[in-house]
Length: 229
Image (cartoon, rainbow, N blue to C red; front, side):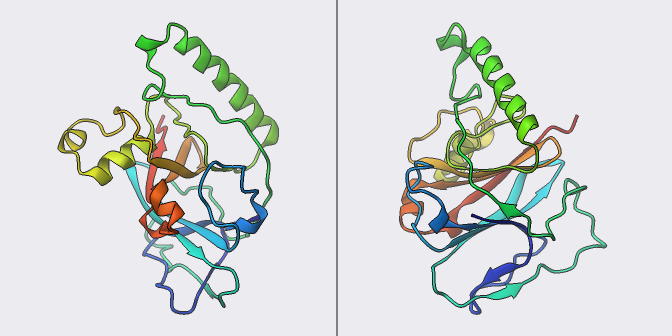
């Protein structure tokens, strides 16, 4: 239903690829069943996910670009920054355009933001059991995984990027002073995509559901979580 990396296929009048961002995935939305994600996504066209990530900064930059079906496109390549190392991309090869194939999986909340340990006496045990199952499946399946919709996965089991994105978009001053991760999740935001292609790290694209329904993918936020250990 698409590919990882490779050249970006964009309309001729589309802006160039932002500096030092890379195409992570190009998705064929027509190949994605409408009930598979719980997101208000278009039933046709392509969705391109871009990101720039730094291993020592939990913030990331990036964007999502929607290209409607039937629009003429041309190849775009990112600027050459081989002499400007971007920590966090070591060992990541996005030049081959590896095929993306559709598969179904279970997604459950697995962080302290969405599961309050004080409110559930067995929260720790349940999360540990689910973590064991999830990572066993990932090891069995192997390779890079791109999740569309569902709940986010944080390597530390503490944070929720959907909550962080919603707080930053709302301009909540308390949310900016405190850690933006440890706040209740607003229901009008969602995880658009999550990529586990970095060693020990994840990149997340989040968006307001209203923006997704209006096809304003350019308003998506991009965050990252990286286990530096």
